[in-house]
Amino acid sequence: MRIVIDEKAGPCGGVKRVIKLAERSLAAGDNVASRGEIIHNNVEIARLEKLGLQTNKETYTGSADNTAQKLLIRAHGAGPEVFERANQSGVEVIDGTCPVVTRSQKTAKKYHDQGYQVVVVGKPKHAEVIAILGHCDNQAKVVHNLDDIDQLDPQRPTFVLAQTTINETYFFKMLAAIKKHVKTVEQRNTICAFVSNREDQLRKFAAECDVVLMVGGKNSSNTRVMFGVCQSVNPRSYWIETAEDIEPQWMIDSDVVGISGSASTPDWLLKKIAAILRKEHTSAT
Ligand code: SF4
Image (cartoon, rainbow, N blue to C red):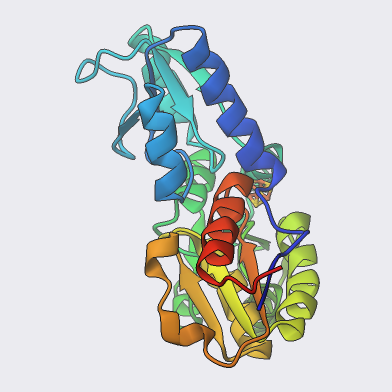
């Protein structure tokens, strides 16, 4: 059996950046707390917590209930009120917002300030979406499914953007439905290029393997999308967080087992899982 790691897998630029910011600050001896889980990967969070990172609630604003001197904003970003409250509490902010997300926030704010009805296609409870709403005075609307479109004002000029990690086909389906309901619509496809380019690469990789192991957090939107891509071309695709999740029967009659990961899956974890599988399957190359 051959165990191959998808050479295009590995964390995206935004995830690498925020992890580096955390590591740098912890190495300098700072007392750092992240607002919500720094990334959607429990294994990587555990590693960073061992180095001293505190993970606080998503509602944490750097205020008195915590002794951390520094507040780390993760790649999903945060609304302006979070920065203001940390500032008022004398807590220094380390801004790990991904530059791609910052661009979405600025675009949404620009249209909101011009009086547009701003619509984000994505998950209403996703941290990135909540942050974008914050940059629009919490007046932007979220469309997650077709029923949500009824809440939109059909007469107002409308600007539509996407949560960065959603599937492109889904975005355009929602956009077409919004255009049927609302008179004047402008749009920007703000899906991250890392995510959209990955889909084609991953489809090819998954089709070449007998079995695919998609490694990523169960709470990661991007992993969900990437896993769906694998399943669409290879029914023997499995979503795992660690090597312990692997069931031996998955490997029956398989010559090539492929290991891939989402935007928040660290390289070291893919290598570790490959090493474990190679050890277990002695004929592995
Ligand atoms: S997936 Fe894209 S938008 Fe999201 S953190 Fe990574 S680089 Fe940034």
